[in-house]
Image (cartoon, rainbow, N blue to C red):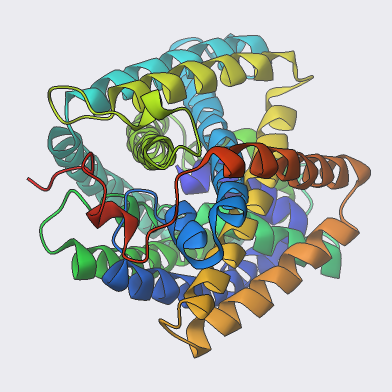
Length: 428
């Protein structure tokens, strides 16, 4: 999924140096992942980033952190659902695959299905995700090897005639690719939001996050290198919304196209489940703290955060349908990817600051905070007006939200919030 949705925009921004931009941002994200691990050990909480920011800086700053979490993950869910619509239609109705209205409608159906499956239970969903992961690794390995086996001159000849062999390098483009890389390797932090629901959550969540980031980055870098050997920078830039379909076509189409597109869909479903899991658990924690309406912080008879899950499912589905008004599918995907990457990066910056404030670490949180903040600030400064507008609106609207919801939030306890609330998610 990450390759299908993000490799094209990253290559369009940084050209052949896209893998280097991913490696650079992943080194920064490792500092953030270490900070998450340290925070999970002292304060395991379903709210993860939001709860740590609130515990470190109080209800008002905590509410602002909650705003960034909600904003980044609403965009993230749409950034997942749009490719789900595109690749579903690539497989079943290719003539509609680049129609933003069709993509939005099919993506919305994916969100609804993922929300329902998640309500069935986290453990069954995790088992299905594991099976999906094994399929992904087999297909990625086979396609990467096939891409490398093709002699380079033959591979370039097989790419579209009008593809540029290289894109002009720019510092702004490299920074943009780094920011997009925040989203490309994202997902490792989801383990922190399940820290109240797993055995040995204090240490397991941290290990899961760090391991997930390192393994994911290694696989993505290997595949990007192989696919850039097969295709061209210009080719990936021209196929930003469906980069893996472009790879499949260069491998000869036919069986490759069916297998790769099907695997992208399987991977996308896993990504949707984990994003909705992260978002719904965070909304539940905010409801529990009264940062959001108290109803969202209640559990049903199955000890599931039903109302938080329903609220997330409904709102994200409506937002996904709204992407149908974009001029093209690629425009819709680029908009939500850029917005999600910026706001997610800001959330990580606040989380690193919380780690420093709570004195659970020094080098990793400080390094992650300074370097990631610098990358985000430079990206916003050098990007087109539209991204500046999105960033300004998102950052600015969080202030009245924080003042409004921070005032109504419950008092911040001295101990980890997840352990002092009677409605905390119970371990299995």
